[in-house]
Length: 351
Length: 236
Image (tube, rainbow over all chains, first blue to last red; front, side, top):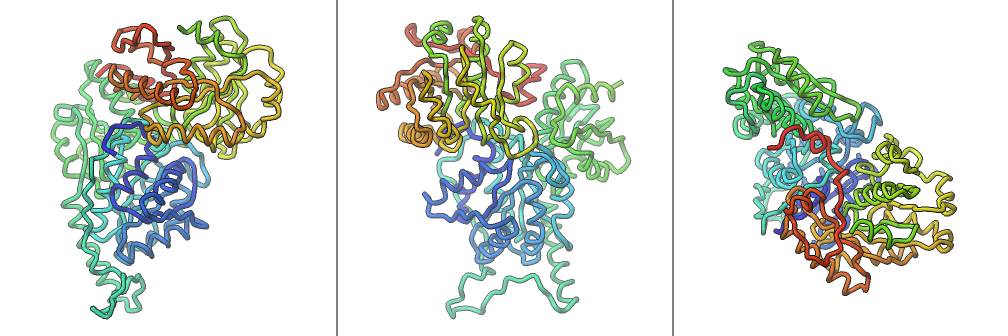
């Protein structure tokens, strides 16, 4: 399907999974993510794939672990409360060095929260989605086209570093519709799968996919080796977009839906003669500190705009490291900040 | 144009179609235009499957114009389990215009089946909204398949096609022409008349899209938008 069509973000994620060669999807419905599952339930059987609605989120993520452990591209998706349920499985996936893709179409929290859009799972995605020493590769799309583009990237990166990858979306991006185009024939670049438990046919030593280590020193060695890979991810995989930041006095830092709002506010501030710019992290882990560093010489102040009580601001403060003030504006509970609200904050900071 | 379209419809209007084809935006326009023409309008949000971008979200805008809005219990709130209020049965007693915004696809239209005995007692027009550029209804077979599924679950017969083909901000003459051609092909295959081709008022007024003289055009406002589209403070 190379022609341009209108898709909801959730549907684009589903189609992108198919285009990326994913033929194993395991999920459990939850608003505002359900269109993704609905799309794949229609499409997977037509391409000879498996769509399975599991009995719970916990079952679904463990099916992903099993399928991915056999070397196939496997994916699950959910929204915030469902992602919490999957956290044990995600930790096992990381501990087993298995590549897999997890999609979170965030809604308000904590608890059952709301079904409206939110970015309150930033900490969960970048710091602690499950127990133990591990990281996820986290991508934050801000358009439906990026939803379409990032699924293959998530699989490729997950396979390259043998780690779980997450696409951190939100209800607004999932539900809204935009024109999107898929490449004519997506080339699928699958990573090395020689580690997979895919049947040795008496030709090689059997592979083990496992996260249990009886000896502490074995586990430590494994974790240290994993962290060496994370250093490579940090060095090679940072992604971001800088918009009007070269001469900006006020650099707004925002990702996902709040970056769309912030871009409008930055344009409006420029129209009023305020030198504002937008720095948009595309990878949330690894955080794009190298590109952010490039703004430190010219920026006078930073403003993070988030749909939460202030989570990413900690990573911006770590990167800025006290050299410039970093302020915050956000709405939470499922409310999206308006461009006018962000503009008012920029104007206040410009005084 | 608009007046002709309003006058050709019966008092009871059902708006159905594929998920995301523009039913809610069409309903909003129809309701506001009927109200402008002095009619007493009731809008019924019968969408039980869509969490965002619903008629319930525009309750204030509609009520301001004297339009009665009946929404699912919890519609527009955070609760994920909408259900129909008892007042839904009262709509069959209304004397003037009643517009029902139905949920997308067969899943969304299923709720109509429950009211089939009531619908049989009133004179209604069921509209099938199409957008040539909406994923999963971009070819004839897909669009006709969805129509068949809606008929099957609702037990009701469609009367008109509404061509709502667009590509959002990228809509231009080529998109319009292709959408129109698509609608005419569906019309030929299904025997349903195309009641109108919708067109963004801005594109129509500025002459960015110029329809043929005999096209039945319905110029519409775009109500269903994201917050950053609503508050576009400067044009870039």
